[in-house]
Image 1 (cartoon, one colour):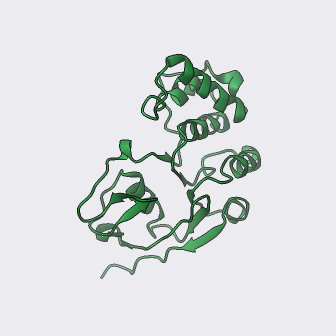
Image 2: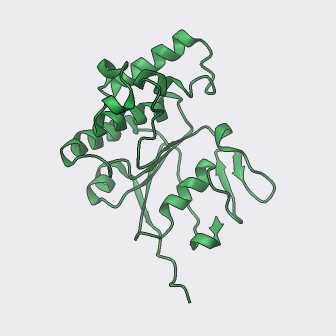
Length: 205
């Protein structure tokens, strides 16, 4: 894919069930790649396929809401007016979980799995950084996306929360097709099957 205004020109392949980590200097375009795959940014050229389905190419552009791609940004971006449970349940109707009771059950199960089920009724301002990130991870994975995108998922956490969340991610991402961006060597060792370095763009003239 090519995003010239951001100096990005990359070609990547992720095997099913594999976690591919993108490393590189600040400004190399790692987050830009994730935004394009997620459908938040439209590249000038190039293509991306998810299985047999084109996400974008010269003739096709599937909007983000129809890609079945789960995107966890550096900040949790939880809806402030919704409880943790409602945040996780929010995208489940689009994922085909029609019944409200089923959505609540799926959301609660994922919150339990992430260790924050007891906080299901709290709103984001009542959660610590680690608790909010666990909730955000649950929201991304609850809809069973075909592809998971993680942009520095541990960068905003307190140092004491990082090892536990890293271990949890290693567990829940097993067998899931994932693209991870991280500057931390410990994250790459714990989470990545393959590491690709994106070179920094050439300096502007």
